[in-house]
Image 1 (cartoon, rainbow, N blue to C red):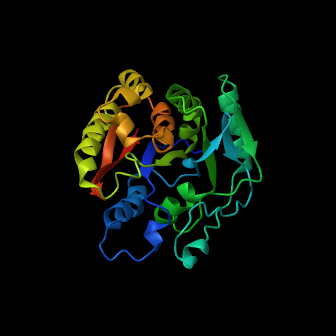
Image 2 (cartoon, rainbow, N blue to C red):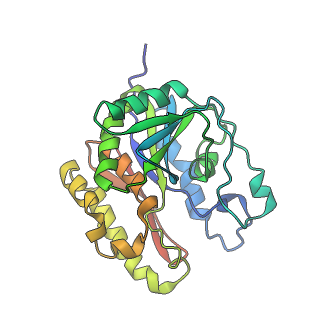
Length: 265
């Protein structure tokens, strides 16, 4: 019998590079790490599988990693040598990847599977904290390089049936992602302005939320918070996969900027 537990969808921050696996004497990442370790306890059940939408994989249309044992992609540079030895030996889920791609194609959305693709740090860095045992099969989902927010909302909606099969959908990005702004107090107020808008949008009814998120670049300090929106688009997939109002489940000032996470039931 199939598990009929309905999983929520999530939009979480994944930090900066391998930040959680380095010395952090100032405790910059302590709060975010605690959040990433803690949210699984609030899930309705242990997921049967997890789809992680990574800000660090851009493709024509959407793609789903379909390796049975995905390798590691260390897509960061300039960090200590040990961070290039991190290993997260999850099993893939090729059948789920194929089904997810077919769900999108059935709605007229371009989608494919990639059996050679490994997992990048948009997946393995946060998931090593959230599910350290690597015991749950996972697949990575790309973002569409058109960066069309409506297309990402539609992709999430197409994936929604998987939630009723105890599949957890996670958007992995950063709610503020302007590299010039991190550590600069001049960006604190604009980042909080956008964070307030984003929270209100996430907490709106689904139709209003979709309309707001589709026009996110018109939000107060929207483009300042995301000069390039690849770290915001995973939110669109998570939000699109839910027909319930969202709620903020984490909020913190990190490196002088407001960072949040959201859950959609």
